[in-house]
Length: 87
Image (tube, rainbow, N blue to C red; front, side):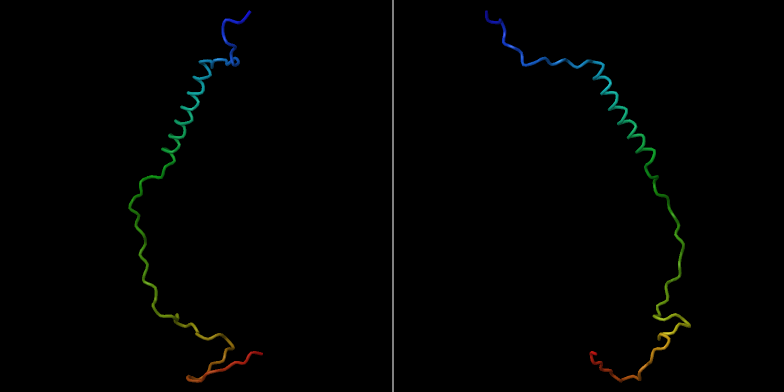
């Protein structure tokens, strides 16, 4: 004899209510902890910070007492040009 109804596609167990409740509570706890950590660890509003005043840097290219030539270097008179040959 033929069955009175079509064969089922397989048994699908319904989710237990307790499993759904635990999943929802777990997600809620994670979201609340994340929000609390963001609130607690967020930087404070910036306060007016007084920065120290520094004098302007000297505009001279040489400092007092500094030499402009390297030790052992030779200087040429003004107007003399040098030519070098590759060697």
